[in-house]
Image 1 (cartoon, rainbow, N blue to C red):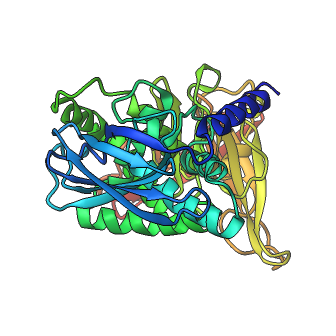
Image 2 (cartoon, rainbow, N blue to C red):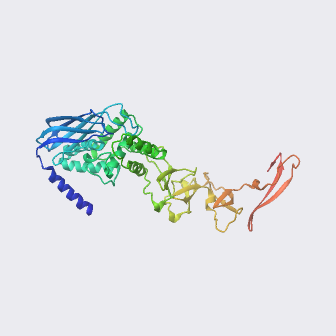
Length: 446
């Protein structure tokens, strides 16, 4: 309710501030950023008619006045307060820290009544393309279209970011939206060349403009993979150092939002004190991620890739939680006639695949005790009316049952001198024992 009321008053005040088609005189300034556009980049402002976004023919020119991306357009006289700004030039690359090898352009649409500062960035460019669609096809006002486009933009990346109007955001700002903007810059650039970035950005803009939804799941996963690897390898720290080396302003905590993006794409959920040490499996529906079917562990530093050569089961429907830790599930794989049982134990959030020894009870057992089981293990023999084989396991301690290896108890070698000698060894204790006879034959106990 508070959110709805706040949105209502924001909407009302925003519409009131727009002032309809009030004329504007003065100057417009702001900051142009991919990374920051370089000094000398051109800035053009077009006046827009207040309902259709049609250009009236009035045009004003300015330029970026320093390598921080600041620009200014002077001596403006508008009949309508709606403008389209476009910057074109070279920029500073956030990922490499270097100046770009090629030029790019970005746009922003704004209502300048009551404000003389308008920033141009990645999100204003996405907003402009979406606003065009909403005004032309949905008959929305510019203000309504901008509000909807802004909500959709942030929902495409982060559903829970507290943001300002996109033309008020800066990669050097101190708000959540500013930090998210810088993260989005880093995410979309990734390891791509600048030409490939522009192609990626143009494709995304067209995708988003159509319905306000980022539909390209393959691109999302590719970007998430870059973000995950950058977090794991220390590249995010390197990117921060590159940006700080420009000595423009403090760099907001963009790393939080880079990590939030890939965690969301992988469907890992929250990582906090309540689930420290728990693990989750990332099952990639696109089958394109380099981390598909990988496990992640909740650590004090957030989710981190985890591996200890375990095999994880995706066939158990029940969730593995702290409440059912250690529970074993037997799942049939195959069809009703032919198949086999799989054995899965809940361990720290994941169902870990094992053999039938997982069903052995560890209560009251001692090291060396035996466990005998009959069943099917990874072989298609159900329905064949064959006798099920027996498997014997030896308790090794710490809840681990090992495959039976009788030869481990042999105390002497089999040599030519003791050829044909025989040994009788009893394994286990009490009523649960296994007696095995061995013979020295050809230099080996059999």
